[in-house]
Length: 162
Image 1 (spheres, rainbow, N blue to C red):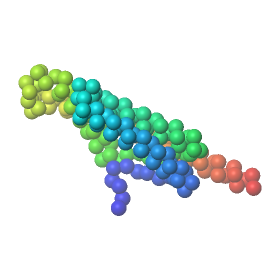
Image 2: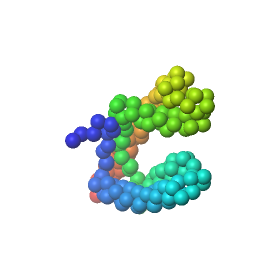
Image 3: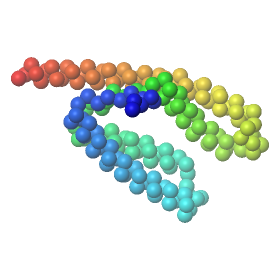
Image 4: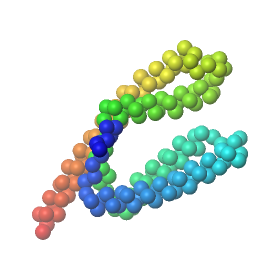
């Protein structure tokens, strides 16, 4: 089954194994901290802040990239979103922002999630972030093409040394 949301291709089988190892390690660490934040949310809700979850995910992502680099995986992958993936990623970003917006401005929206101001803010936020997601996706695509060219160049150098 072909994924319709993103395109993904690793450049080397060894790289794939190293990336899987780094991914498994970062996944376990991230899950432990997410469970800890969940326990904080259940047992001490006044100490819980939703940005904790976002921070844990960002730290897990940085740990993944750092661990992959330490293992020797230098060519990450060719990864970029399809158009449908970009639209869904923008919707995810918009949803996170708008849930925070509703939580902080619930009086302005008169405790009604169907208030015109709130629905307009959804549309504005989505349209504001859509070009940024497409630009980020373009950056991911160009980085993947650069990594593949560098990989092919390094392979040609290895063959010429033999």
